[in-house]
Length: 408
Image (cartoon, rainbow, N blue to C red; front, side, top):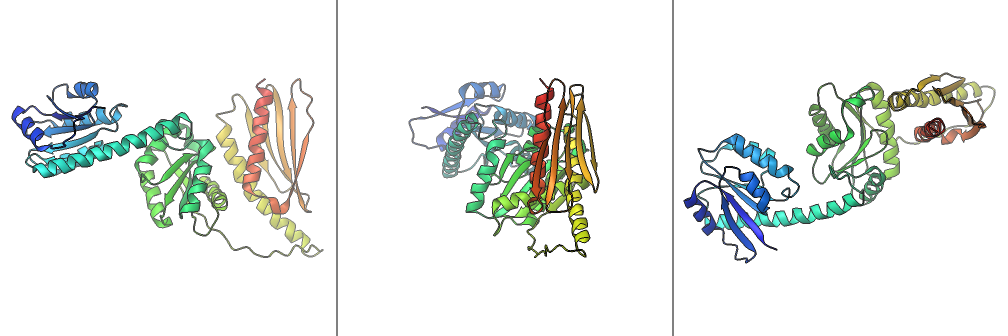
């Protein structure tokens, strides 16, 4: 396969000097020179592996930056290496060009050795990028990563992060847009912003319900908090995020995921909040029930049940109001029972949770749908099994059932 190295310059004499300095001794390498006018069109046709851009006192910075941007946005050229050649070094132009995506830079009067070594470095980097991109293309075809931003897809994020947690410690983050502004930015746009503000070794993936999972390898919680603040600053006006995060030292990933999600739920109630989660020491609970402590035991559990159902019902309502077309959503949470209701022209369904005060939580699911004879479904949950994730799973399943029944 022929590898083309291209120099963009309007100086024919300088072009010959550069060619003489690049001693690669590889028959497969071809050196070509093109003029700056319409240079991108020629580069696009030639598809070189390395481009030198000669920047002189007569060169326009805007033309340079536009050229770099077009290179990085072109599917066939995104692994191409790009070296900026300065006649006179300009720090500001270098910084701008670096942000757009140059690979390296040189001064025009650099030695032959420096030219050769820098060129070989860039070619090696390009080969590594090409190999990496080929693997990403395969993963994209298998739907393991998203083809637009290379983040892991919802079906694989959990598995990838769990395996990573077995090899390294880090800080795990569950991030989501705040409830009232989720329609203002697409998940893909948010993911693109995240990608620009984290390291290449950090792991990002989509999760359910607008959530994004992040893994910061070998990074303490204080540093992650700084990154989250930086991400918030780069978001569009009037758009905010919340997150729950936890260090994964000496804690299984499943437990870390559970605690981080709980922290996110609390953070979303406040909005624009990053809440650290930590494993609390287990406390021994005296379950002996007698006349004196029965009332107190029940009151404490009812408070725990309310603290789970109140934010869960509220967030679920807000999240589904735009999704469920022409469907009214109502929810109430009291000491006696808590109910989440869905109603449209095709039927009405209710999800009711009650606690009679003994050892079980009662859950009744009732679908009253036109032209359907459906019996009420009754579920029971041991009090020690109560957690937000199980309730959220049951509630989301109830909503999906309602959609299936009423969309027919």
